[in-house]
Amino acid sequence: MKVSELSPKAESKLEFHLQKIKFFPTNGGCYVLTNFFQDVMYIGQSHNILTRIKQHLDNIKKTSLTELGVVYYVYYRIIDDVNKLNKLERGWLNHFELVEGNIPLLNSVRAPI
Image (cartoon, rainbow, N blue to C red):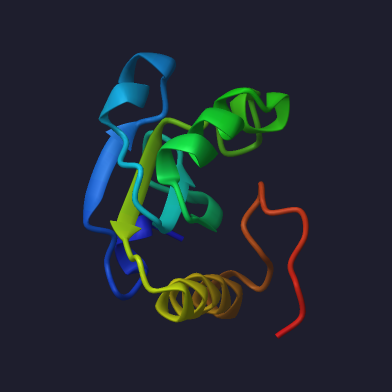
C-alpha cells in the first residue's frame, strides 16, 4: 500500500536519515515510514516526532534491509490532541489492514481495539 492511499493524508515528508533529524518537529503526531517508492512499512504515533524518529534511527530492525527495501522517507501529520492522535493512528492501521490483509511489515505489536 502506498502512503498516498491513507486518509487523511500525511502533511509533510522528510528523509529517514540522521542528517535530516534537525528538521523533524517536536510536536506530537502520526507518522509513516516508507521505502523510496512510498510503500508503507510502519505506522506509528508519538507525542514528540523528533524523539521517536531518533529512536527508530537507533533501531537495527528499522534501519536494516527488508523485503520492501530500506526505510527511506518519514511522512507525518502533526496532531497535538491525544484523542485525535490515537484515532488517526488506529484509522491508518485499520485501513492498511483492510487493504493488505495484515499490519505493516515493521509494526510488530498491535494493541487490541
